[in-house]
Length: 128
Image (tube, rainbow, N blue to C red):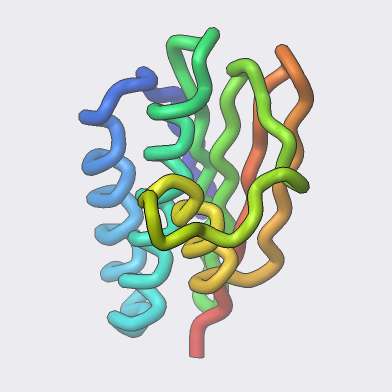
């Protein structure tokens, strides 16, 4: 199943995406640990867009869910960022933890961003 959502860049979009993902994974009887990992990862990816993708009003989420895996793309047309410049999070601030968490919770994490052309983060999770 593939679901493509065009969402407003606002905080209310995050719980809507989480609920859709949770419902989809429940129908497929995905184990709770994998589902929780994906919920946290998609929450962080969407929150990053909301907080950092200035210059755009919307963003896109694509969920590709199969019986044995889930792939997620979160894309925006904002100002972009340098993925190589995002290091490990520090202890003095909560900034920078989103990408770190996504990398820890998901597989095949890829990021692409270009100035004034937006950003894409792709991640996957295989199920037992």
